[in-house]
Every structure is written in structure tokens, then in C-alpha cells.
Image (tube, rainbow, N blue to C red):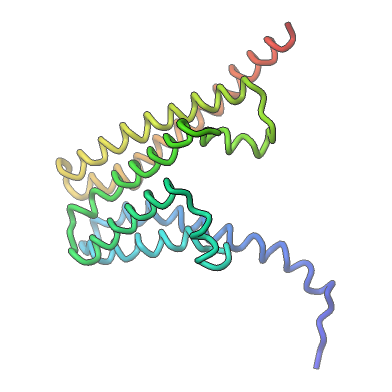
Length: 212
């Protein structure tokens, strides 16, 4: 019988640690693919099952026991999670194409609530992300991240309203195209625009002010 040494197992540890994160990333990326393909499958119940599975996969992938993760949810997290789970379950039980097509609007509503809640009781959502680089962010970073969070709230409100309109007014193929692809292209443009503004305008301006 061969005994593997601790040194032999050690290189596997980083790989094992990264695998759950990759699984969660794949679950996040799978959502727009499901929406994009929904019109071709012609089965809202199947789409609802997939959405429900992705919700739980995003929550528990590589994070230990389900109960431990549920205890970490805030009231806002619970509200958003329950709303999306109920929407998915409703799609499964009713096989309703209308509820399925309203699902992206529910997602935008959930993101609006999640981001907006951090403006009421800080730190803002974007400041939480910035704290990975700035554990104790200076005042100008706090102000800037709050404005960026407000910008995302405006986007989620507008995109959610437009998404709901497409659910009623657009044919299935165009609904899938917008909510599964074009909406994410807009998100990408917003992210790239914010990075460019921060790198070439906001940070140099803050550096000049500190030099005075």
C-alpha cells in the first residue's frame, strides 16, 4: 500500500481552494446563457428549474454547510433571495412564459434593493469592493464609491423597467437577445467607462488635490 506524503498533497490545496470559486463563477455566467436560450427551448418549466438550481448553486458552491450560509444572510439578502426563489418556483409550477420573461426584471429589482440598501446604511456596495484594495478608504474614495453605487442603482432601475417592458411588448427571440446578451453588454460598457473615469480622471484629480 502506497502512503502519500503531505508534500505530495500540498500542491493540490490551492487547486481545491480555487475550484469552488470557479464553480460559482460558472453559475453566474450560466444565468445569461439560460435566458438567451430560453426562447428556443419553449419550456418555461425547464428554464425555471435551471434558474432555481443556479440560485442555490451560487449560494452554496464551495461555502460549506447550507445552514451556515443561510445564517450569514442579511434581511435584504433574505428579501432578494426569497423573491427570486419564489419567482423560479412559480415558473416551475405554472409553466408560465410571462413569469419567466419577467424574471430578469426581478433580478434587476433585487440588485437595486441590494445596492440601494447600502446607501441607507453604509458602507456603500462599491465601497465594500474598494475595501479589498483600501482597507480603510480615504474620504474621497468613500464619496466616489457612493456616487458609483448611486449610478448602479439608476442603471438597475432603468434596466429593470425596460426589461419588464420587453417581457410584454417584444417577441420571445428579441426578449432573450436583450436580457441574455445586450443588457450584459451595457453592464460591460458601464464597468469599462467607470474604470476609465477612475483611472484617468478621478484618481489624478485626487492626487493633485492632495499635493496642494
